[in-house]
Picture 1 (cartoon, rainbow, N blue to C red):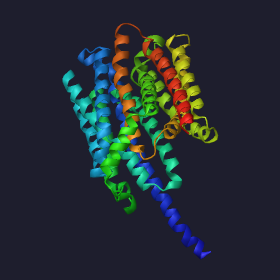
Picture 2 (cartoon, helix red, strand yellow; picture 1 turned 90 degrees about the vertical axis):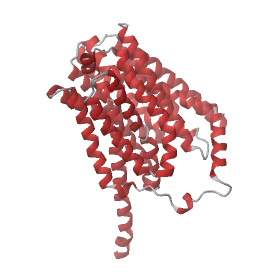
Picture 3 (cartoon, helix red, strand yellow; picture 1 turned 180 degrees about the vertical axis):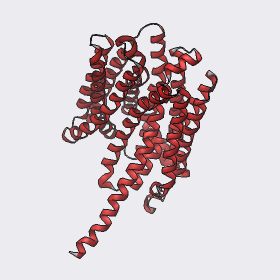
Picture 4 (tube, rainbow, N blue to C red; picture 1 turned 60 degrees about the vertical axis):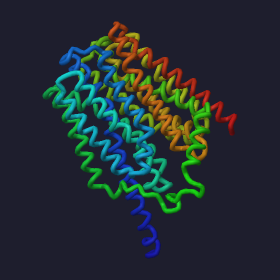
Length: 414
């Protein structure tokens, strides 16, 4: 009896440490997704304050993701050399600074600078997060760690519209932007206080470079990766899925206002509902992916369903009361695809190239997120109010196509 208690104590401590790490990394990751929607949530007051078109506003979001995409690959190398903690603190600090720059902006150029600083901050999170989780969380709970990582991201998205809209209604948009920076400052303080949990040190055996030198192995892996058409298919898959999600994130507020006459507050609630439902969908998708080996079928069916719901919304055929739940249902469908999507990418990842594949894939997401706001903003300026949602329908369909293509290639390879 006493031996059992002694033996269970280390396991209990290990479990508690694992979940503490997962929780802290998840909260930091939520800040990344939270800040991705700060500028889009301020589109209406920014347009009124500075006389901006939707295309000009879309440029700000495009710049944010372009900077993030370029920085994503390079930040992984910095994490390997400087460690995850200081890079995480740098990213969070950039968000704090961006919030204050945005809140004190006096011109479009100032908004542009705030978008650049925020994009630099956003670039670090996936290399940092996966470095810490892989090195600090024990193997039995890694699956839970990755699931929680995705869910906290969605919850970060869900928080932004309500947070920004509430502060804007109570005070003004400048207070909302500065409040976003202060909220991230609180999380930055939490990560400094809990810095021991984020010490992502490698075990000695893993840290020791292989004989013959790491650089050559890295070059070989990179060369093989760049010649692998399946990986580029995965890049396009993520790019199109990101285009679809970007349409919802950036233009749900003006679309629901124009087509259904919904207020900014109600439209913000719909956008938050999309994100919360997406998190619920990820939980459901986790059960599906564990019981179904054909992950591409789950991805395809879920994305097609989400696209059809957005197309239905775009046509204006629903009553205004049905718009908010329909947006949430689309988020649920898109969320179900999440775990199966990650499993699909894992199936086509060459041995020894996990980091490179993650960098390339997430650059695809940033590429889509950079292109979509500008293109959809031009559509809205031209009076095509259904354009972003119909574009999301097409993009979700393309993602489903590439998912099937990737799975077919993976079966031929194995």
